[in-house]
Length: 163
Image (cartoon, rainbow, N blue to C red; front, side, top):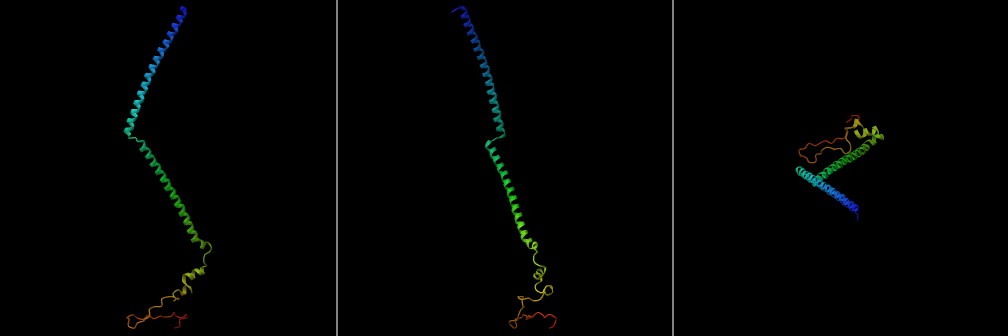
């Protein structure tokens, strides 16, 4: 081996050692930065934990509260749907009742003479107060001396005023 080769070998070894030292320094610096970052992370986690403790945050309670809120909205929606359905049914019943009531009038209904006969009875308004079959005939004195005056059962007066 010549002197030149040895010098080059020493120079190469020296440059490798220099590179290794530089890399070790870089690793040490990065390790320090990593330790600082981990410390920052731990400090932030501690602050977050303290904040959550201060606000009494409970994930289970949060989700239960959220579920109750959603259930309340669902109940409101169901109530509104029930009200709408009830109004629809009421409208349909009202329309059907109106049709039952209005149909005879819309078809013309009974004649005026028929309505007057229903209202006043046979003979019209002039004969309204006359006795009719099935009317109460009055009291009859069935026992003498009962203390009750005998009610006279009278027949309707004939037309024309003759007695």
